[in-house]
Length: 353
Image (cartoon, rainbow, N blue to C red; front, side, top):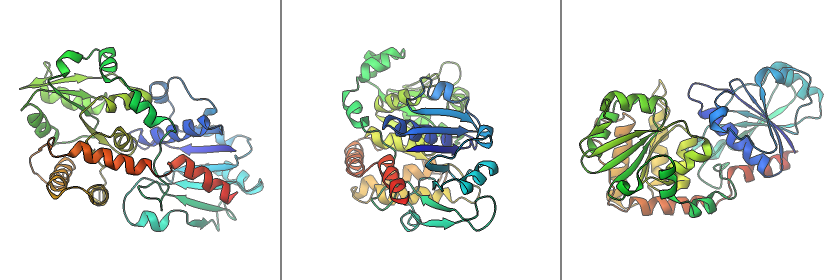
């Protein structure tokens, strides 16, 4: 089928990251994709090699004369350009899908797959279908390329670290931690915790690197901790970073999902919302993620997430020796037993055609 995916940058490029991964995965499976973005410059480093079957277009190009695709994906409620929407009405009605944000909250299962008829405006007469990513078979699932877990098994951690100028010999006696976060006042407490024993912190470019540089100073060291400020990594290489670490601090949606596929401990910082509802998102995920965890591990991981997300002023304590990694592997295997998001989306679009 021919797919048109629309995505707008909100503020942190996570929307584009998800939009690109979906477009690239569809293209890899033989679909034809046009990805419309209002800000495409980030793809120069996020996906420098492009992807087979995917054409990236500027947002305004959707207003020019072009037949709508068989499937139209409106990512994260970005609203379609009015001229394009009018052509959808005049053409053979495409399958119009609203791809929503990821959440573990109960409403996701209730809302996934529901129709939303449009009664007025340029889309009057069409039906939009809600598609919710999630963690259970009753949702839209999680993005996962067909070969992702095979690539994970074949990955050479030491070779990748050395290729990025990180001394593999020293790492044998260090905890390796990656940091990708929003502005976070708890970061100083995390640095104190990491400084208690030999650790190397691999810091993503942008805000994480800026915060870390301010707190550690020009030496980028504190106690037994040393930090390495990384260049911008492509999405493909960011996966490799996650696979190279003993613990990953991630944020938003895209890196959050990729950390779960890595199968190592992770700490998630949710996108902060003014009404504080992001705390409910964190708690809902932890309820699912920790349901089968031993009580001690569940308590420590929940306390850590609350402190990292500013729901509590507790110290940052890392439960490395409590079966955390084994629990993450079991969680990943459970998710991998389900169909991935692209597979479910293809089935959904075919059913609604």
